[in-house]
Image 1 (tube, each protein chain N blue to C red):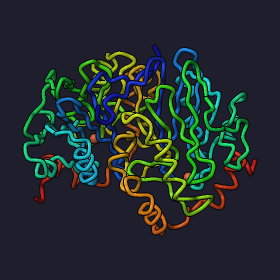
Image 2 (spheres, protein in one colour):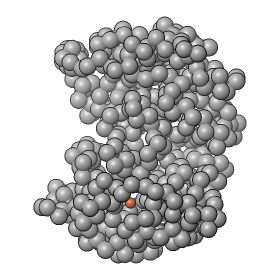
Image 3 (cartoon, rainbow over the protein chains, first blue to last red):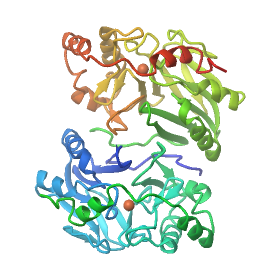
Length: 242
Length: 242
Ligand SMILES: [Fe+2]
Ligand SMILES: [Fe+2]
């Protein structure tokens, strides 16, 4: 079965992908349409109002705001969202170094209604990067570990290209080929990929480990514009000034 | 059943939404994963290479490039795509005034493999605006007739707000509430909506016809930057200089 042959996400699943253009970040809203329990992944400060309005209109109840890692390019809205929605909890990897209500470990399940996401630790871009996999393995939220035809950089925070390579190969590429890949960012207007596609066409991750390390060492990317503000803010859920 | 409770698009359907950031245009690729027949909706000149690369990687065969209308804000890649993919045909409404291999009329079916889109004429933004509805009414590509929480402007080309209001109410809002709405543009990082949501929350189309006309007459929008280049180009499938 080739790529993305279905987006069938099972019954009772509400799913929305949202984009924040300044940092090219994708935010994901998922809910059980019957129980109305919802979670949000990687919400961004700039789009807090848009996201909360949508949550309100859709009539779902946010129970958890999860960050796939401590982002360096934007400030999370998690902290302010908690202030706006009493009862909402925040979650992030226990290896992120960031404070949160829930510290995630490999194998943890994030439940919302009859659905759940499973936590897979996929370090390498940072120590605390996780990939969140739907219970039926129909989709995976890969954060900055695996991007569409790309991957997160490994030249700041706790970046380690060897570790990232192993995370992607051992924890993401072992998912079914048809599993949809929803990354934390895209810079080319691409919204989704699949495990099968990335296994075949990712220009970096199809290489050998040695070639991958070489590629990652020579990207010569500028430092993210907001890193000195974003990382400290995200270590405290984006509420450093509140 | 509330909004977007499923993205189940039936079997054998490959679906991709793509974004062109300069004009905030969405391009859609749909294919039958078995026969590999594919169509593309509203492809943009700037992202021609990206789109053709994806078509190639996914191993599908583009048979038709459809424009939902003669766009004023960007140049279609349809003409150049035809040069790059011999056998590809172009399609647009017979009321668009634009040349194309296929002139679409209300009720026409666009077949790709076992799937098809039905053409619904939804004029008002322009005379030649169509909405393309999946055979099972699971999704509708609304062009600029209906945007997410918005709609196309009616102050240039053959814009007529009364006509647009009637098109949306009679030809789009009559689709099932769960039908996914995929517009030609979005400016706020929203990717999809549903008929039910727009019927309830669209700030313009929930108004009376009189209020709608009043709103549309007072938008005071600047003229699209590229209109004087884009419209003449799109009237000849974007190949005016070739
Ligand atoms: Fe990151
Ligand atoms: Fe338009």
